[in-house]
Length: 467
Image (cartoon, helix red, strand yellow):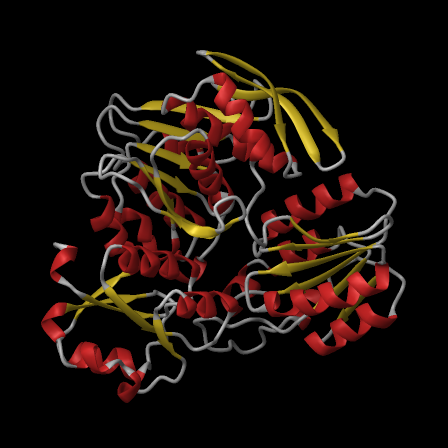
């Protein structure tokens, strides 16, 4: 498929983080871009400010005239989260438009390009943003399609200057989307059970990861975290270099960290790989899991030719991804953090890191479960990980693409949470409690739904309270 044959590109679900990166790419490359999304968000407002026409009511007449009148010259890009009963999607199908999933378009964009693909049930957004940042900071030409807003780049898209530049892609396992990619370098950060509504069980998910790494180009490289299923690494093509990484030599024989020390929010460590050691790396984003993520990213950057000096400077300059361990408000005695974690393992890693930073502080967590199926499948894990906090406030489940399931509610998590204080709340109640309740020292909002709409309100309240 030649993307240049489509002067018009219409996005169904343009507000998704991956969809919006593609929309920005098409607009930057001279296409006329428009789209639909069900909800106006800061991201869709940013796209509109960049010149992209967006509407929020699902009605055929809202599709721009140039799209309705130029079927053969229009590409429709579809998010897997699009509801099956969408009126616009139904009309575009009936009219015979060329409709492609986001992953299919990414596959076309990366075809023939040197591709660095970062996969994993968690950690892929942070790790891919790290790779993109390291290359960009060092002055190497590179492009990137990210699943979050990089603080350093100020965007989820990094445009390459030349066709020969490597492309960093977040490789999404949902709906087996990453099987459209044929990377030169692949990173697998984790293979924990997730998306069981698609896969049925973890063995099917792992088989999908095996298929993904089997698509690494001849002579390519796989970096794989020590927690990933061992059978994944065994599925690479002959001649593929496999680099296992972790925090210790036992976890990552080919790539590991040493002399890890934490000073406030900063981690200091040395990077060890067979080619040599890089001493004195400094990472300003807290969490041992982020040290692991940076190990993989730094090794990939060195494969692209970064010197020790440039690598050391780039690591020190990394500032993270919006909504990934983001410090929203910091005061002498109090902190408010926000994190996108939506899987029990992610929540556990985040909250344990918060505990390590503030061991004597009373921690309140406001959590919004994401998807009915995920809540059902991992209820016990959610309850256990949330129990790390002193206080847990649960919001209703964010449904995203799903319809409600009988008996599956946020309340089903409550009984097994062992935190001393726990409650079901609305966003309004959570905000009111932040205004009036002084029982907590550290607040964290956690989740992948629309809990981010609460963040600016909490920021305003707590900035005033803690000043």
